[in-house]
Amino acid sequence: MQTFSAYNANNSDAIEYQVKIILFTFGIYACFGAYVLDWLGLWWMVAIVSVLVTRWMIAFHELFHLKKAEDLDYITRLVPIPFAPINLGYREYRAIHIGHHQHTATPQDPDAFHILGGSLKAFIGAVTQHEQATFRYISAHGVSGELAVMMIIRFSLFVSMFALSPSAFLIWWLVLRITYIINDFVFFHIVHYRSGVSGTFPLPLPSFIKFPALLVYGIDVVYATMHHETHHHYSKIAAKHLPLVTKKIQPSK
Image 1 (cartoon, one colour):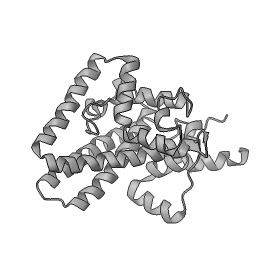
Image 2 (cartoon, one colour; image 1 turned 120 degrees about the horizontal axis):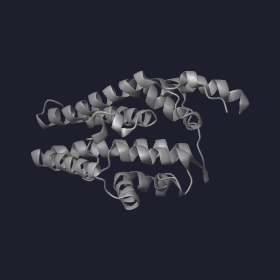
Image 3 (cartoon, helix red, strand yellow; image 1 turned 180 degrees about the vertical axis):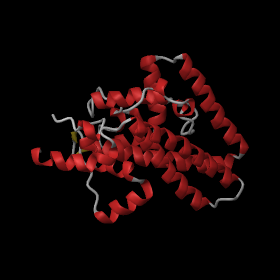
Image 4 (tube, one colour; image 1 turned 90 degrees about the horizontal axis):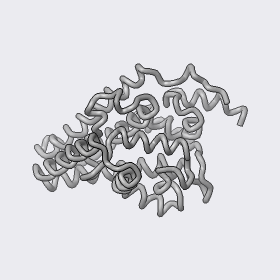
């Protein structure tokens, strides 16, 4: 297998992803504050948060392939977006994702519960991804001191924001959760399960969807999804280079 190492993500890309994660995290929380204060209408909040969450998710995904938890700032390791009251941090989600690449779309894949078994089962898995991933990880690995402290911090954030404005928080939280569910279903089930066959598949998009998606969600989101098969073959390649690498390997397929 060719390496295409010239297209691998590097330390500058890792720094870019960390900066994006912090900015997107701030933006997601700022939308909550603006919504609570009536500075931001409901539908503007929904639109902005859904885009920020999607970009936030892909930045984490790309960073998983570049940096261990100990190489990162505390905010990035904390993963402070309250998708659930009890949740995992960067170290744990990275371990799960590395396991996904090692055992892709097999029963040994730690993400199998939201990939395999048909669309309904995978969708239920996507809906309950945070709870199931947390339970499964802790059942297998226990709770480290770092994880315990971070879980307490995340739980406190969840409860504090709910107490500040229960109705606004629930609406904002639903936007977070629904956005995550949709992205999860596409990025795991749809690209790893086709007509009863598991594996890794590309997801071609017609131009009338691709170009608006690039404008709204950015290159990393669109290319990592469209060229997911190439990503699994060459996981260190930056998402921005996946279309070019796909073209280079296409004749050999």
